[in-house]
Image (cartoon, rainbow, N blue to C red):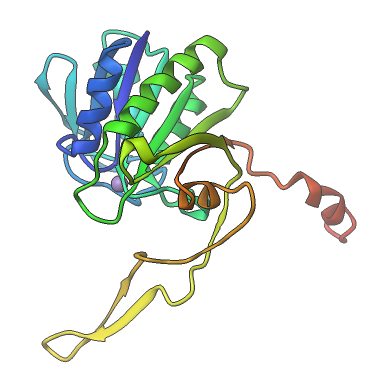
Length: 248
Ligand code: MN
């Protein structure tokens, strides 16, 4: 199996190193990742300046762009193989519920899916920089084999979140739905040392709606969460309602 690994925390992040090492045991791995942290850039694509890639070692490239740039450069220019699978992560911090719409980690898997390549994103639900990535990396390798054996439905990729608890305490993986976060009070409004106001969008320690079967519910109870995500954002159940408006 030929695997492209990327992330949004940067090529030197411990999560991508653990992921690449685990996947190397089951396949041929190349890493193309941002040269610095690019978290929360979502699906951004660099169009207005050139991109530079640096080969750090055979099959290891850093790019001064976004995770989506990395998938593009990897597949269209840098790699000497066409990957069978793209895996993005292991992100430092969860990507649960509505947060997937901000995530560079998730967007890299989305980009691969747009190209017709099976993909999944893996995140560790840690709150600090000391997360232990071993259990998440092991599960990623297991899931890679399952994806290779079974394939994924059309336009579908997987969003995996692993609780940050000792590996022997992690409960069985659950297939989940995308949950809902509570975003109240996320903007911090303060005054800087020169007396000028500033704002800081804070996302730490936000609560979530405890929806049964959701990714949040699974991870908060110690389970690994696997959510199938779809590229088609259409709300099909709203089509009939909109057709009832005087639009057409
Ligand atoms: Mn990140």
